[in-house]
Amino acid sequence: MTTTPVPLVLAGARGHGRWHLDNIRRLSAKGLVRLAGICELNPLTGDEIPDGLGTPAQSADFGALLDTTGARTAVICTPIPTHTELALAAAERGVHFLLEKPPAPSFAEYRRMADAVAAAGVACRIGFQSLGSHAVPAIRELIAQGAIGEVTGAGGAGAWARDEAYYRRAPWAGRRRLNGADVVDGVLTNPLAHTTATALAVLGATRAEDVTGVETELWRANAIEADDTSCVRVTTARGPVTVAATLCAEHPGEPYVMVHGSSGRITFWYKQDRVLLQRAGHGPEEFQHGRTDLLENLVAQVTAGAEPLVTPADTGAFMRVVEAVRTAPDPRPLPADAWRADTRAHRRVVPGIDGLVAAAADTLSLYSELGARWALPQEATLG
Image 1 (cartoon, rainbow, N blue to C red):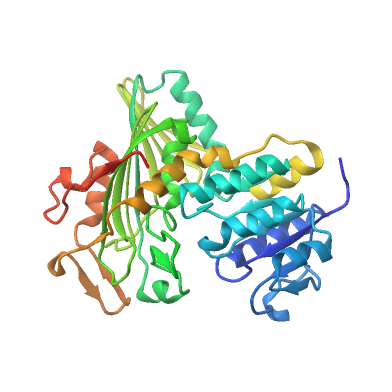
Image 2: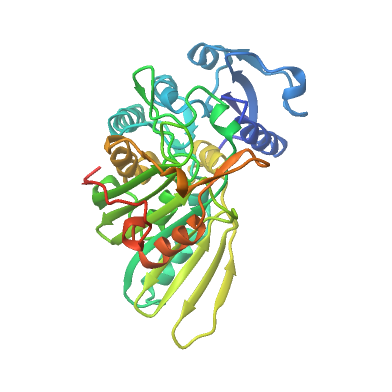
């Protein structure tokens, strides 16, 4: 066990990377890590680096930065199409790393990354922070105890709103492909990817082999290439998992997953680590859980042999969904009368979508099965 801070390089320090900078500052204050380098195409200014992180080296060359800083760990928070190559650069240098979600834009790229991690013997976390919630094993234990009877499936619901600027934040935003490379920046695979991954995880269906089929219904209200209003139904060894999501909500709310049983159900608001148990013959019970930070868990594994959380293998089922979305027909534009422009918020809204998202999670049905006049069933695939 080491008692000195572990040198770390952050690749991608703007956008969501700012969250990682703050988290690194927290861990640095605890003496766990030292920010040795920042990889950005344009160097950060002094004002962009939080107090307490010193003056880290900066470079646009990730591999060279790992070499010159002697980093033992890294955080990769860069555009989706760059994930695999940067992960391989870390692995071949024996650097342990946290890779932001989605881990890759295709199943083949995911396998390249996962195989390289295994061959190099490095520790890797995939940045599904919700899977570090202590609620996930607690829900699995409730299921194992028969708290809600026989499990009949799980649903996920995410109703968020994103303005037009969200799709202009980067060249790859809202794209399925860019310059011939897969991106797959759809609502289920990136902004609300946690809903998809968490719904699979609470059933314990996390590995690629747990998935035997995926049905997709991909739609878009915005003038983008990828989907912004979609649903999937995943056939797993542990039951069906239906996830519905939109970035065009009328009234955005907290995303959640719901496990259905023959005598009750469990609802998990994963951003809040809050669980509601409802079962026959009992009053509702609510639980608040803690959470293990994934970067802290990575450092603890590297320095003290802690049990790893959210490894590449733990996201194989999610990547089956990504692959099904990637290979599905391109998302269909919603009819012009199915959405309206909110000029004040500079965004598009799909009337009634909040209720459809909730109903999909509640009944494990797809939009087309819920009577949405614009929804047509699409193809099922292994993914």
